[in-house]
Every structure is written in C-alpha cells, then in structure tokens.
Image (cartoon, rainbow, N blue to C red; front, side):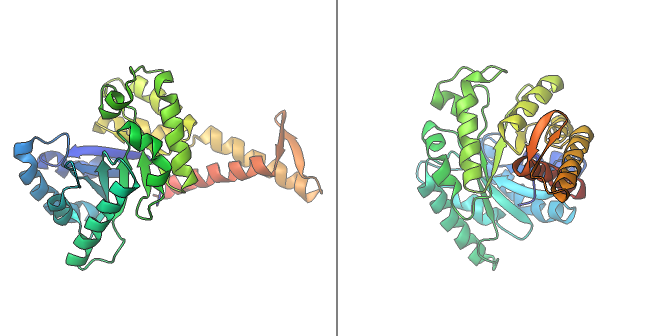
Length: 292
C-alpha cells in the first residue's frame, strides 16, 4: 500500500463537506457511517457514501468508509452499499480478534462478488479500540486483506474506557499500547496508524503529538479536521534537513565501501551497513511522498 500519512474523517451525512474533500490535501479520506452519524441518519449517510465514492476516486482521492458493527457482525447493508470500484478499503470499528476480521472479509468477498469486483480488491483497516484487540494485534494484522492497523489513543474514547487509562498529551499512559500496536503491525508487514488528536484547533499540540507518534514508529494518523491535515502530513514527511543528512551518510559510506571498508565515522558516529539501510529507507520514503 502506498504510504498514507493522513486519514481524514468526514461524516457521510454531510454532502457539502464531502464536496470539499479534494481540496483538503489528505492522503486518504474516511467517509464515516459510524460514530459521527446518528442512528436516524445512518440510512441517508449510506446513500451519500454510495454516490460519492466514484466521484471522489475520479478526482484522485483515495477513499475509505468506516462501517458500523453490531454485537455479532459488521453491518452488511453498509458493506453492500459501499463496496464498488473506486473504494480502496473499509475501516473496521472495534474488532475483538482475528475471527472478527475474518467475518468482515467474508462479507466483503460476498459484496465484491455481487458487484463483479475482483476478489480481494477491498482492503480492511481494523481500529483497535478494546483491550482484547490490543492484545490480539498481531493476529488481527496478519489477515491478507488487512493493509494497516490503527492504534489510536484518543482522550475519553473507546480504547481509553476499555484500557482504563487517563489521557495526557505526554502519553506515558499509552506508550506501551502504542508501541505494541506498532510492533504487531510491522511484524505482519502492515502500516501502523496512530492518532487521535481531538483539540483540533491546537495545531502546535497536534504537531508535537504527531511528531512523537512518528518517533514511536507510526507511519500516519487519523485526522478529525481539515485544518489538521497539513500538520500531520508535515510530521510524517522527512524534512529537507533529514534527507540531506541521510544522503550525506549514504555518500560517505559508499566512499568507504569503495575503499574496502565496511564502516565509517560520519559526523562523529559509527556507521555501517545497518545504518545506511535505514538511511536509504528514509530517503525512499521522502521520494515516495513527493511522487504521490
């Protein structure tokens, strides 16, 4: 999956907001049918999402939909309505286990078959919102349809209630949870997605939050407000100074290797092949972001 730095939520019952999505600059948008939509509006929101996907995709926007779930399964009416060409994937709320992801995958396969879509085209992105799902993160991440795993640590959200933590901006109380989700996702070869900053007008706080999440190993974040997109994109994009540093490191190592040495001192640090492999990955990330 091409890197997604910013996953922007937009309630699917807000068609005038959806019309503005291509101008927001988000790497991907999530048309939300779940928490931001009241029960009385869910049918109408489903219809709006159904009509909006093709148009958004035609504009170059990557589109996901967060569906609803009941006590026993994910909402099949949501799935049938939105699985179509142009939809990149579904956001799965509150999966408890790999079995839950398997149920969702079976429902999506049925919807793909009904729409004559190639099997397996629709990605799944589970959001780990319970204590059990955090413990089961690696098993959940291994499903072949899963392309990313969300380990968001929102203030007073579902995961906060389930784990019992008291949120702080510093995040010590969620450090283990976030790091364990990063490790599970990366061990399964999937993208770890963080978030969720709720004080949407505090852009300086968001910048600090996103920077630390990137330091922990996340590759992107859920975003609640269009004004937050640029801040998050910047946080997850290697800066010009970073890129220059790593290019210089690669160049210094290449000179040393040409001279028959397997290590070199670069700006006071011991550098060998492991460090240069990391440097190349960061330069490649910067190039990938620029080409999107």
